[in-house]
Image (cartoon, rainbow, N blue to C red; front, side, top):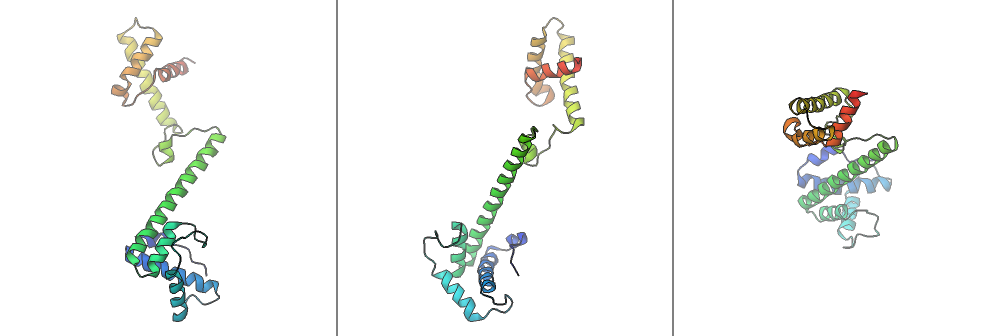
Length: 192
């Protein structure tokens, strides 16, 4: 039986989470020693707790790869379960954030290799418009409508002047800042 940390354990109060870390450590060590995890002798559990209590202040080189986890284990061994639970929760949350960042970067690298550019906000859970043809068409239509309105009201302006004026009005009319080159590209696509 191999223990896997369950995400719902993070919903436990700090005190219970701190108690859980020392119990899990005892169970894992008992299992490694060939003992039944459901029937661990009290003397064995006390021995593991004593070892944890006597761990050195310097956690390097003892096989635990993170200071927060090491400190949580030591605190739990000394019976300070509330502090141990807080340390373990911080360790798990930071690990989850690190994993999410790694996953996001790996995905972004893969998209770049395939030539796909995705808005960062979409990758972080926001709504992407680049892949949604309906939203792309709506945005393009809104930009072209703004250009057409400016042309109707200012027939004497050059193309570049129309695009620059559209850029200056874009925040007010479209709700976002759109560069004049984007208006130029939209109009070029329409004429093709």
